[in-house]
Image 1 (spheres, rainbow, N blue to C red):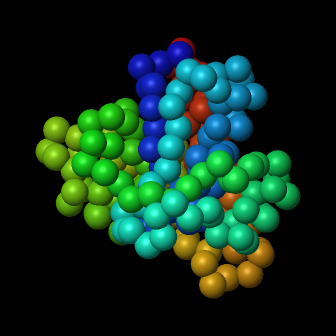
Image 2 (image 1 turned 135 degrees about the horizontal axis):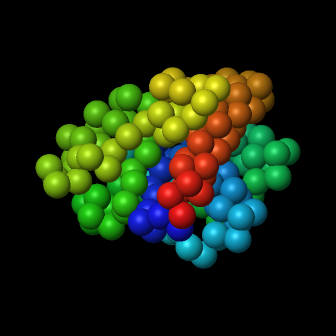
Length: 159
């Protein structure tokens, strides 16, 4: 596999989008036998409810697609994350801006939008579904699957 050994997914609160991306990526890597090869985690740019489980609607939407978010717990991005992770993938441009403000110069190049790896949703932002209906959470998962799928293909080609 490529030189990517660790990926951090980031949204604002770490309660729906980034834990969903964590679970999707874990599942995609596990299906290829790479589950233990890449460290996957998620975090938020803001500290809202540290240690909280993901939003109930996110967990329900994920379960309908075969993903388990129950092991995810909200946490805020730490200074050490910037050096630790090989890739830091944000859900939207606001998250990218927040991360780049926090990151040391040597780590800024690691910060990208998740959907820059997608095909169907390339270059788009994963919208925050909080306050939306079940369809909003399903749409977010479709977008995340697209981005993670593209990233897995990149990792496969680099292997």
